[in-house]
Image (tube, rainbow, N blue to C red; front, side, top):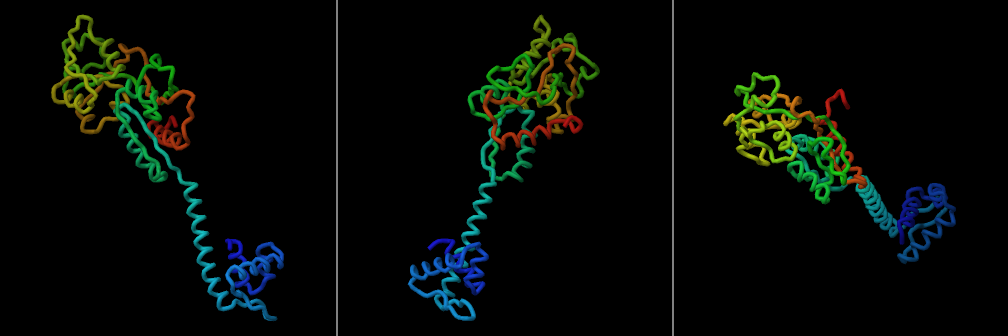
Length: 301
């Protein structure tokens, strides 16, 4: 017994004719008749009564047709389920990122999972140096970080997302708020708190005066702690423009920034990094596209 035999059986029963079933299935009448006969031999019963009025199911035939209807519906449901599964996207996306990207990645994940509910997104927040290590070692599929164009690791593919200039971040009540630019003398004897990142440390090194009058009170990977010290202790920090723009309102409303373009002449960028010569899966490419759409200004998309 097979699915084709059951379909022929159902067609003969519905149409009351071997000829009609043959036409429907683009088969010959003898082929349909042989199929039904084989089924009758297998079951040991007569399935149809043949008369001048046509082909009529026997009592046994009606019962077999009832089961055939149920079986064929189950088969069709199985095919539909398999078709859905074939079109369903599964996978994992692991992202290593600097803190400023976290809110955007979360927003993108929430939107992404509406269309791809079976894709799992994992995110690790880390300084730029650890983002690079994570991607190189295969612990993350993609990474996002701020860096100068001259500091690229050749083992990775670097894709520029946007220019990301450095800024001095101060308490909104700081005496420095009256300056439009900083050349170094203005911050003499000021206390700094820095994010533990090579880019930030490099910018600070270029900014601090040679006699070492600036004190670094705290170096940490905890961004919340840094900005609380800026707000409550009048400390100063350094952050890239994108990081500042990504801060929550309760922090942004208490700080102001001063450009450091004149001191930090080397432009910095927000980068997406991936392993060189390794093709990303379509699901990762789709997620990245949605994320970058959120990041970029509307007029640049």
